[in-house]
Amino acid sequence: MMAQTKASAKPVAKENSMWWMYLPAVLLVTIFIAYPFFNGVRISFTDWDGFSQTSNFVGLDQYVRMFTDPTTWTVVRNTLFYGIGSTILQNAIGLGYALLLNKSIKMRTVTRTIVYLPVIVSPLIMGYIFYLFFAFQNGALNDGLMFFGFDPVNALGNTTWNPVIIMLVNVYQFVGIAMIIYLAGLQSISKDYYEAANIDGASPWQQFRNITLPLLAPSITINVVLNVIGGLKLFDVIVALTGGGPGNASQSSSTFMYSLYFSRQDAGYAATQGVLIAIIILILSLLALWYFKRKEIEA
Image (cartoon, rainbow, N blue to C red; front, side, top):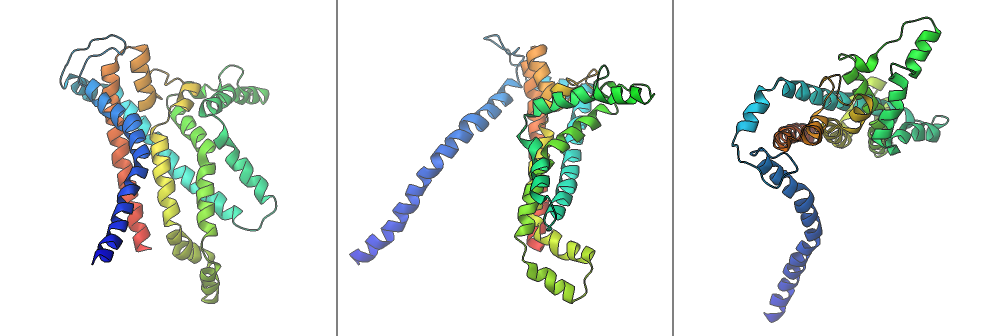
């Protein structure tokens, strides 16, 4: 009887000791994520300027101001465009690269390195590199156009095109991450499935639709969630290319919050905008995770 009690006590003690292993992670999340978020929510109910020692409680005034501010909807539209547009293109192009590099082709390693190389460059530096390409004066694009007798274009000053340029630069820089994740997923698929499909006379498209895509569901889930979060938080590239202008035409939520806090000294309103984008990121991320996790189970 005593022996049984001691034997049953050992797993319980071991299980309890494992909780101490989670403590560092819990502390980090609490200090750097949970506390700043809830403090930001608190600030959103004040008129704090970001620098003074005192602030006044204003209730829901900042939220009323946010939802009646036309700039808010421009910023939200841009943020969703950057997030969703980047997600679609990064996944489509990344999967295409992965399918190509999964085959035995010449210079496969070099191609993979070239595609992934922009990832290791700072997004701010990448933005300045493309600014030198698209700049109206002395930009490489306009120099090329004028060389062939065309008029220069103000691509970054065009309110229709500059959000597209920002999104495409972000896609170019981070498509390598999607490629690597998809490539790892493709290499984990057994060739036996394709051999059986060939015997049954399945076409390449049928093999891709019925074998490759279902078995890539976990990789798709990871990529979509990462791309959505990354695209919705876009900041550095916008600062380097347009600074959010002209006006607020290319502002994302991140750059708009930065401008409100540091340029306009309106920290209370900046915190309110931060709460809005946090809710948007949370909803879209959970929806994407739920949808693609369900596809994994169906596959």
